[in-house]
Image 1: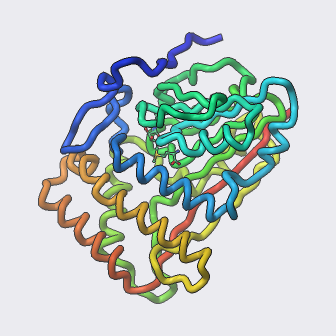
Image 2: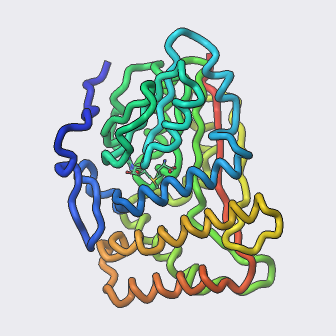
Length: 307
Ligand SMILES: C[S@@+](CC[C@H](N)C(=O)[O-])C[C@H]1O[C@@H](n2cnc3c(N)ncnc32)[C@H](O)[C@@H]1O
């Protein structure tokens, strides 16, 4: 068994935060440069509600219920839990399961179902500090930009899952709102996302992970029954269908919060403040006034641990 490095959430959560360019960040991992503050909690909540629309009112796709039918101790792990909303909803839905949400920062609510707990841990380390075959379901959503070696991370996920357990990976594309055929791109929007991807690459984050989830799962020993469920999500207020309109509004709100959240990361990569502010303003302009009805892609893949 590996040494346990999980931190209980202590009495003084301020020790887990530092401030950079007016946003709050985690002291546990100073290379993860999206904020862990109030606006990111809001964005994490919005993202969760958006995916509930996409999953038609549910918290997941795939055989999650089936994976939680066996054994006396049913355990669910949410990696990079953010505001913890997925973990909380899963704890409500499966009251006999123990749900653990793990993150770099204590930004989850304190009033949660009794079967839900949160722990602090940097998942970008060699060992994820839980025993082998401990969990029935492992969920990791919008996490890959905090993980430098995603293949190693998946090997850890395989180790932590019991045989027959399920991993569910969800990663939004890092190239959203591509133009339809023969349509010019949203230049300001595209420039910001190109720069964001270049900064992540400079920090040795593999920006191709979202598109390659099935391939990466297939390359990890121990997974089988790999299933892909990628989806298109409208961005904005253009859909006529009320269900799609709600999804589009939520995705728009998510991006509206994300654009200023990228500022510290771009500044830390050496871009001058005037360039960063112009990039963000131009992207905001395209978000508020798109030249075509934009949509984005969410990459989803799940797999079972071999029996
Ligand atoms: C974009 S948020 C997504 C939150 C949540 N999974 C959701 O879908 O709403 C990414 C989360 O992953 C956490 N994170 C990033 N890198 C991490 C790491 N190396 N170890 C643990 N958590 C990490 C961040 O602190 C943040 O809360």
